[in-house]
Length: 511
Image (tube, rainbow, N blue to C red; front, side, top):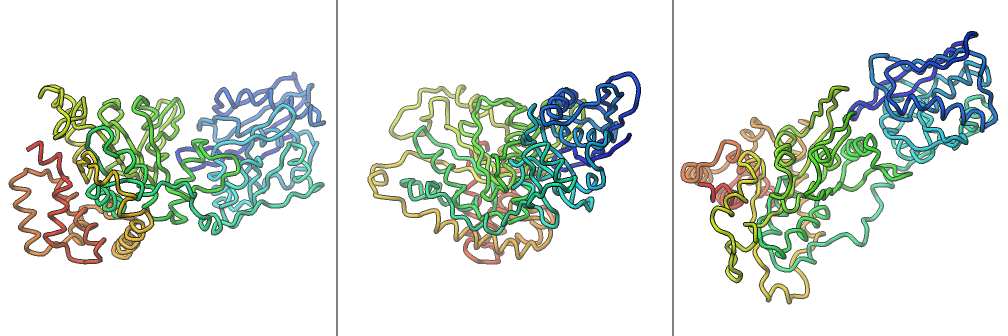
């Protein structure tokens, strides 16, 4: 007898439907599994057999069993097909009715005793079920909240294979899992959130941090050890604007397919802040593997990736940032296939001015010679620096600032300014798909970054004198637009242009 169930495969951050066909006929007792399965899918046969027997069902030992995962030319990976294959086998051997089995997209790993274990990509499967017009999804309990953020479908979370069979047979009731998405966004931020007021002094760097957050700009901080570069970077997440539902879903899809969500975590409601160590590999940063999976860049989608000690990172890994910083997507190609992951990130990096860290420090003598300094700085290429909008020097903090009770600005005050500036950008950019000034294309820069006559002349003089590249010129205009937005001014003035030019410190030093 033939039975059919439905499951899904995650390709990038989208799910593709997979039909699980099970055919049980008389013949030489043997099991066949076809449809480009990987090792984890092939091992499913042993898990399914043990789970069925331990759950009180029978295995057709005297039959020829064929499992087909269609489409046959698409690679299938992971234990996600355990549950749909087991249900299909039970329907094909008439141990359960098959009438309702086609109403759901089904996914789940089976333990040997029949319990269901979590899988990757449950959110993607729920979105696919809605797209296909299915009634809902069947997923393990640890994936239920994640899938339930999708509206207009029902999410059921049986704990065991027996519960799934009883539900589909109509012999047992399962309550659909519900999630109040609005309540997730209304939860207060953690009281342990880092605050800008903790950072003493560094008002210039805090201003740059505010501009970066208001426009979604990339930021590089250069200063000696102990000058609060890392403290400043770690407080950026607290001044970014809150997630929209669309952004939260986009980010959660990446975390879901990477298997990075915590059990029972429904949605990423706070912008991610990723802080990889400088020893990480190229594949860990970009993503990869035999089957493409997202890396740190994509896990920071709609949030921040902080690279401390930037010159210490692998050169190939750092240079890989150039394409996603420009295109806001990253494509990973492998022999087994290719995948595209979103990568709309804010890059925040920190570095010393030289190997010893004290070049230009008036109080500590630098031990590096000119060749060592040049070699150290050359680890960061010009094309990558061009893509970083703000270059900020972070000097040592004087005693007067260190002894102050607290900083002048707190995160709540700065975040209010950032949210106000982002709202102006949202109104200006409309439904173009561009969410911040940093994401504007050339045409939008031309339309929305107009300066008064004095500002235009100032920028012309700066380009002629300092030799800014075309990309640097565009980024100066974008930063100036953000500075004007922070002041609630529509026309960019010479003061805004002047401040934006000051944030191109490394460009000026290379001339």
